[in-house]
Length: 363
Image 1 (tube, one colour):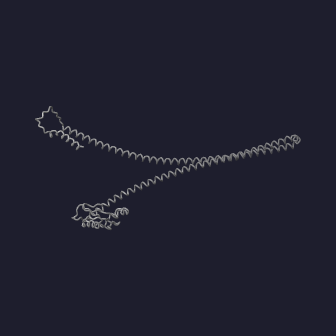
Image 2 (tube, rainbow, N blue to C red; image 1 turned 90 degrees about the vertical axis):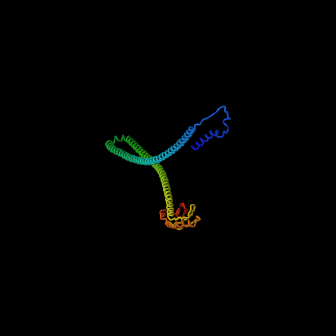
Image 3 (cartoon, rainbow, N blue to C red; image 1 turned 180 degrees about the vertical axis):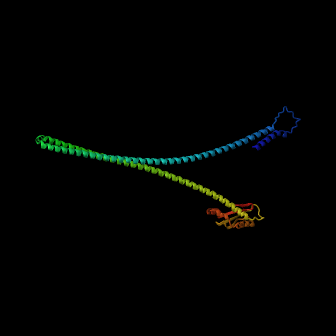
């Protein structure tokens, strides 16, 4: 921009002076009716150009500052998003733990409720059995009292009959009728007692069936709840296993990447080491010149010893080529290569080529 403005300034000056350079007419023969002149302030033009340059520079600085500010904002937004994701993961973990505890508490409460219901049912059954026993004992006592009373009445009646046979003969018919009524009453009472006992037995049977049905329903409900809980626990366990597997794979991937980076760094380091060893033993002849290049293929044993060194590309100068091959054999053994793992050695250093140039070695 400053160069362009300077160029425009020079063009403007040249245009103003062109009239004086190309006007060859004799000024004495010209009689202009009027003269028009225009003065150009070169200082003002220069200042204007400098002002425009300064404005352009400021605009460029403002643009760079704005780009830097946007970059900082993006980085801050990314960091904020990462923090939010970490917080969400922690919150989800806590919620899962709370849900787990809630399920355990609900299961304990359900088991306690079932036990209390079973205890209550057992208590009611025992109370009912006691009530039945008491009712039977009371009925037997009542019957025994009635029979004892009847026996006493019969004995008194016999005594009275012996004492008053004449009067009893008149009342025989009435006594017989009364006896028949008593027998009928006792038969009716016995029948009623039998029906009540049968009714009580039927009620007990129905109550037992209802209790059994209720217990079976409760057992089914508890079993279903347990099955659902186990299913939920299984799903959560599967999810936890998948998450653990994902984390394990991520950790393995990170370890692999770290190992690859370390291997690459070690490979570069070993390359520099091999180059420095070759340069230390290479004796360049005085006849060597820039542009010459000899490529030597080097084969090594895992111990770092030189297996072979073969010239695969000649520089055109046999002496230069010979010094390159001899440098490899002079090194004889690259001892630091034993630090490499076998896979890295086989991949990068079992066989490789080195370019020998007067300017320096090239890998």
